[in-house]
Length: 385
Image 1 (cartoon, rainbow, N blue to C red):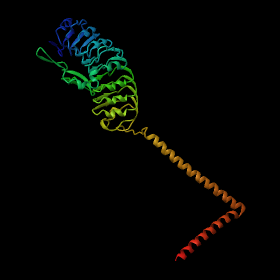
Image 2: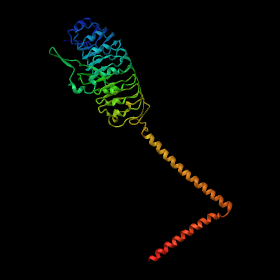
Image 3: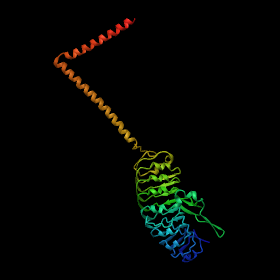
Image 4: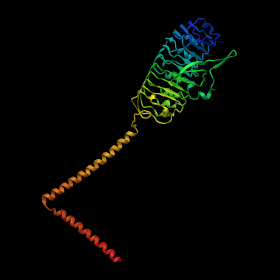
């Protein structure tokens, strides 16, 4: 049984009776209306909700912890409201959750303190973008995303997020919108193997966790517009299914890892507005990216940028050539200098002593020996005849 009232320009507050109906309703969709006020707080134990969509309203306050009683919840979409709360740690109770959308609210605080006691082995779409989350990226949270880790796709058959309820097929993902590959995209259906993590436009700080490279089934990763520092982990080159990577508008530094060339499905790459330096990797997917992927990184060089560069691999060779050339020039100068000194010394002797008899005798002796050897060789050849 479902209650679907989306896109009707309804206003007012959400009635408290929704709480009681949650024990009989499996789908509630009140999205794209003008509801205001707070979300009802008392979702009873035994709640049967599988999908709750109250996105694109004017709701305020916090996200009720009693939603943790809805153990079968697969999709939670509260995006585009005015909710003001910390990250909902009670999510750890929802081991059936597949899609979590908190985007464009006023959520704040750290996510890295999230305590996972139940593995979120089905969660494959996470959108926390456009909030005020801070602290380090939640590595502990990522470690429990079994649906995005390697091997999961081989164990579970891909299927759409639909259920047959009372003879009616309920498509949970119908009309869901995500920013993917840089564009706002509305989905008519959603496969369980479509994976996305969007943490953009927050205040996350620190370095990008290396363990993100273990989420081998991830298709879309967006960490843009945060305060991230340090290098781009080379482990991101292990995200073999990745189609879109956006790390723009952070404070990342160092070189672009050549391991990113392993991303054979990568269509969108945005590394702009960082502090990256050195040569841009060449070949494979990197040959398809334009200048826009690298804007604002003044120390990057190489195609597609107009700025050429000498890589670190070329620099030592250049130094060696310079060293060899320098040694060669020094040798010539030393030989030239020695000859000049010897020549000037002999000239001085000639002009000061007259004939250098000792030198003349040496030359005459050499000439005499050469003449004798030449005559002996000549007579030898004559006798043979």
